[in-house]
Amino acid sequence: MCMAYYIVLDIDNPGFSTYVNGAAIAEAADDLDSIAYRLSLPDLDDFLSLSRMEVGKILEDESPLSDIEEHWFNPAEGIVFFERLIKYLQHNPYAFKNVQAVLAELSEYQKVLYKAFQINAKWHLSLDFWIYSTCKQSPELLPVV
Image 1 (spheres, rainbow, N blue to C red):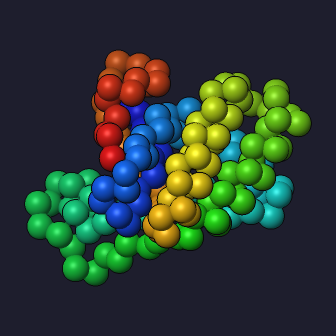
Image 2: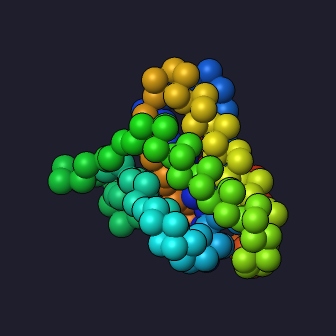
């Protein structure tokens, strides 16, 4: 099973694409969490939130779950978080394999959050899962939000 992190905004049609592949970040999530810990930052999953419908789909239940609350974040929090990770990785380009792909995705996340900030949108990360013979970054398999 493969997975990818993607950005969800609280505005359905923000006027720009929020698509970022997110597979490289998901693959490096443990490494990024270790770096975040060293930098006294939250974990990547601290920005993760799922809607009731998403949880229902994961649990293969068609009805929304009433006790699930989606959490939203100010774009500035994410911009600062991703900037700190980017700076660390720029100074430590061999911190783990695939650093360049992770840096590219982190930069794309920042661009989305800068645009979200401009329209006063809130955000959170969500996860996509898919089954594929290999977990290579494959944008056609990921959702376009």
